Image (cartoon, rainbow, N blue to C red; front, side, top):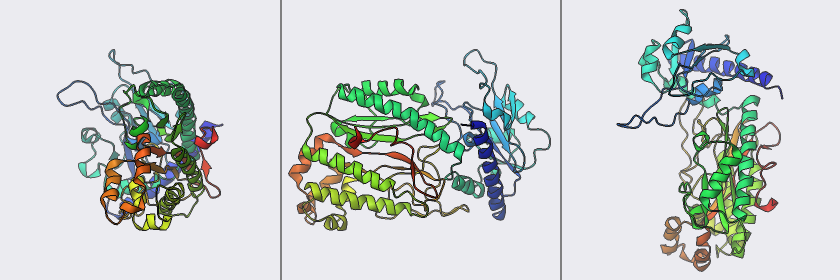
Length: 449
């Protein structure tokens, strides 16, 4: 694959989106002719000299695949972006410049030793710039006024256009999926061998070839009932279980993958096995709905319809699927959204925006945890991750309510409570034709092993 050609097209697309963003901002009174994207400045824990783990400003990272603080990109429509890489002389830290790569010939790449030098390298005729980054101090050092630090009128279109992924960005996400698939394969092997959560987590990192602080998010490895803790982060227990939920990704050039699998191995309740098979089949149907023009909230609603049918079929819901939906029973079994936009940030921005000019469209009152309710368009990359859990704090209100108590077989729920729950997640590109699943072809699901 010609990565230089993909990156060249990527920069051209960013240039067009930047021009449109500046025009939109101008109509709202923010008049600038370019943007200074800053990778960020190190921060430290309170009353400590230990730095907080550094993560680059996402909008900066979209322009330049550079890691580390203080780098800048000066972008003005119609001109090659100037990427200034800051690598100070330092004997405490490794400040080796980025290795020679295909992307450097596409941009105006400059190497300097400090942020002050970077500002000097911008030249005398830099025009009127807005600043996008985390440091007001850095903006002031570049003579950018406070009113032009991430002005809302500019950030709205920049965030909106982040949802449209270029071919280069999809390639980076796909590369991250391939790394994560290696980790998931190793995790499955270790689970079958009887490893602990901590051992599985370490095996995943080794297979991916990343340190924990290089991961796009804190991976989840949960045995048994802990699969019902949606963002379970412990991973230090020595407990084993025939059921494991693993939610873990990888990162390539700042772009994330986000994959979840639930595995059942050995002596497991037959109803839980049926639920796992049914949830995998439901997830496959939902992935097929990632098509241009579809409302994402419709996929979420279809998720609850599918879960209601499944719960009724296996006998957990003793009434009809329609009764389960009408009484919000499924909301207690799946309290989160069916997925989110994916990109530089795992939960990528813009999911609730009304349009490039800004404004918010909140999620439906019935589904407050839904992270995106945009209409899907070609170029969007989203996750599809239906879940079904046995969480006491969610189910107890159903059990205690006279109107819903008799809709559920509570003896069966109690028998399944030790398994925690099920979540299955794939990363999907919306196209003008069929959806493109980046993960399932390389990372099998529960029904495929």
